[in-house]
Image 1: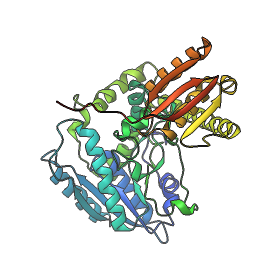
Image 2: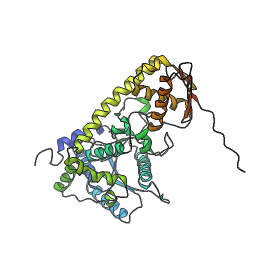
Image 3: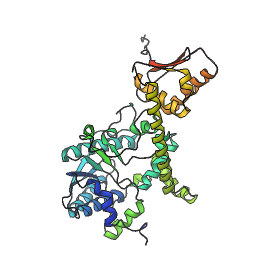
Image 4: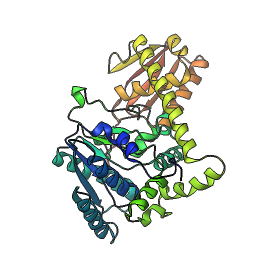
Length: 379
């Protein structure tokens, strides 16, 4: 068996976890499935080789959606104790939603993990997302019509507060806003322990993103460790499960998980270049300037490449509007209409989007706060 197919070695585990060596505590998100069970095993093994290791706290979220979940949480607890790791079970209580169940369960999970990290005085929640999960994410977001920011895939590290709120910025579940908005921060970011403004953040970190799931299963098999199998992962009622079934078919045609992840890396590089260009041009134009009304001369706007102009328009609308980030499809439609009006030499143009009004007047593009909507009285 070659190293690329074999179990994760001690040297690889050291490289995966080395940046956590100075942390006082780490919360490990452990469901009991193969990926997270391997994370628990590898992290515990790594800690035995560290002179002053972090205190590990394995947290299992019991969503209360399957009768087996309590038993699976108990199995994780027994394994954690055998490995010398503290274990906690957190339960998602209350009435469960009838629609959007997986999305709302995901938000609840991150909220519970955030609480667990605060209690453990940990700045990191570590999850077991793998290369296979990244490939599925890329396909999933492409199917939803994502822009470049979505096709970048999952970031290796992200403030958990952004995942723990279904209404953190846009009023929509995170997955939808992450896929479709141009006004959010780029998804690729790294640790910034030295930045004072981030010192109190709790970060969700995915150190296993470059590892295929198969290697984690081999690692557990060689260690003689069993794991649970969540049947919902193959339930065709859920989009993720249907996308997962496409992976082997696409791989047979050459579109393997490795190539999908490589695509995400290239898109991430392109996304970073676009963002840099947006910042430079915004600074040159003095944007945003007045956050209540933004004006750009039409001649200046005409010189901006289409993708950069689209992003600037989205940011301007997000700055002066009152309905949160702009959905990509709606932004593209407005941008196309604006450019068509400019090309036709129209003297007047006016559209509203996300609480902002975009106008074309005297060869100037004006973005200002839209008038409040009036509701007709009932009766």
